[in-house]
Length: 429
Image 1 (tube, helix red, strand yellow):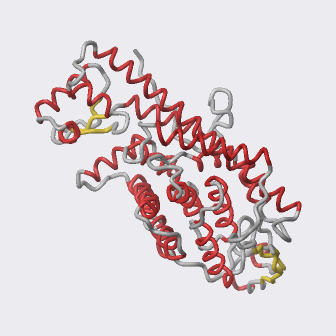
Image 2: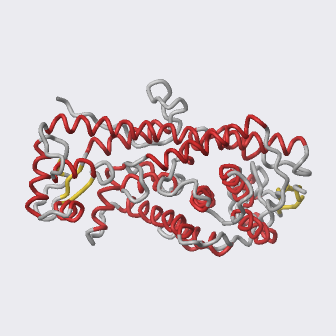
Image 3: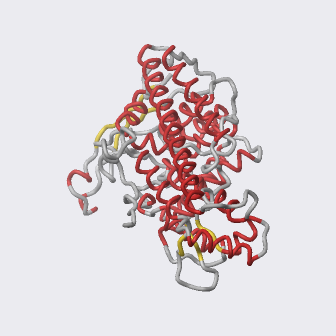
């Protein structure tokens, strides 16, 4: 039965140098959620329909999307946005162009000069590890969650606590020194391990719709808050790990977390509604559960809808490219490079050669043709291992992030509700 535990926080000594507010003691309540395994689930009709619609949409995106395929560079940009906690690393301040250039430098064995982009790349690698671990058949466990946390914070100032389950009480909101004015206090540390075991067992189950399972697991992880910091990144990773384990997705990472961040008030209200007291079949519990499921399913559907808009815009862009190029042989290296650019918008001649399986002179000739049509642009001034970029693809992705941050999906009608990359500059004709 979900309940709250009353506890006391002792006042700090006057010699601590803290303000009166931060030094004071108080009584507070820590929330202990019900275990998930075996919890009765009462899904209302409208919410059940929302879940079914969201799952159909995700399956269709995974089946038909090409530009956002998991093995491509743009998917790594989505992973960046899904995995970075912007309160610790200003990941959304790192534009797609900066990140792609840093990733390209790293792929060539160079040390990227962009320190922030390098930290964000570490987060992408960690998110990829979490999803790949599930792809390789790993089951959810406390150790896997600890390893995901360790990797997600490895390139940040939180590295020293990476993978360490907390042994002290933490809280959300209020003062950094006591929980007296906290908006939420998770379970006491001695209860965390057993709750994580239950969560892991729940994530390995098959009995619920995938979207319901992911929504419940995410909410439960946030309620447990098992790490001293960095819980948000692991909570986001769990969503995609469940999607992948249940094969709802096989190659796409739908930007669910970006939509949840945009609908922050509904997101927080949904998580709070899950913090009921009493039995899971009580009216408040059932109402809170359905409220959260509706919010989560809506975020999934919105993420898919915006991703499809991006895919359509990429298709329209490729048609414009072909029009600019004029006559091109169907089997030419130029056309094949054109088709590959949406997924790999930053390239070198050597990469084009390997990607298309052509000679280096043929690769250079294809690049020159696209440069002349202003489809590719030099990204660097150097002659050796020169980098070229499809700026219009990068700009479309930037616009996708901005669109996902708008409550209405249109930044003209409603400005982004959170930090996003700057609007791309459109060069004058």
